[in-house]
Length: 216
Ligand code: AMP
Image 1 (cartoon, rainbow, N blue to C red):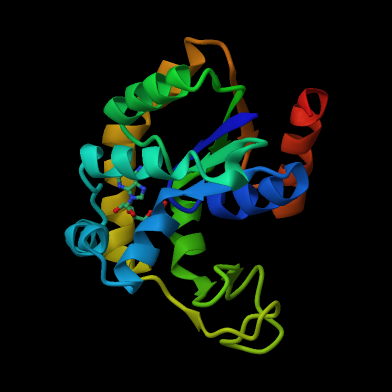
Image 2 (tube, rainbow, N blue to C red):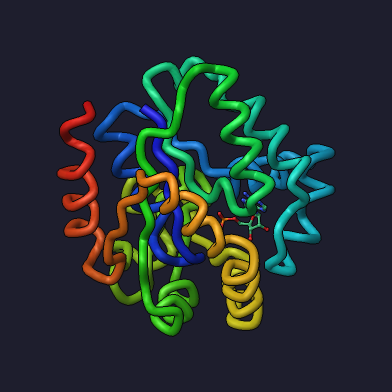
């Protein structure tokens, strides 16, 4: 099963992808996570990507497309993949189509998470992430039991560099200019489902799972 999650920064793609991947046994492929791992490990890709990431801009398509190509054959992807944060440009969407076609694994669902842009600034500003396991928290709506400490693994919680307000606004503009056109690209193919991402994590996840249920 191949699922693509679309949505503005902060719409909850990462949180939903984690829930869905665990429930459906799919590989959660977050290009943002793969990039952050490369930055933490000081790889060549990480060094190339970090200036774009810190400015809230997109990393060049060719780097991202090759990265995805390298990840998609992982054994964990055998049952399926949930793409989180990819594709983000028309070039990436076309590259993904070509890649999936070559593997004979077409996209089954495109899930679009819809939310008011101002709500996103509040959401992203309060976001904290576990440095160890990647679990996502929010200072107001999903606070950890002990401030600064992950409930799951006791790892340290941190604020992403790109979650500062000015960078958030740049990321929103980049999303509107470069990624929002993908909604039409996928809607025209007739397999896009839109969900209200403001409803709360569990309600949104239940809605998506119910929609995918017939397919697993
Ligand atoms: P994310 O965790 O998905 O919000 O991604 C964090 C940052 O990584 C983005 O703001 C971009 O700089 C970069 N990034 C992640 N995925 C992509 C992508 N598909 N295309 C270009 N840049 C990306």
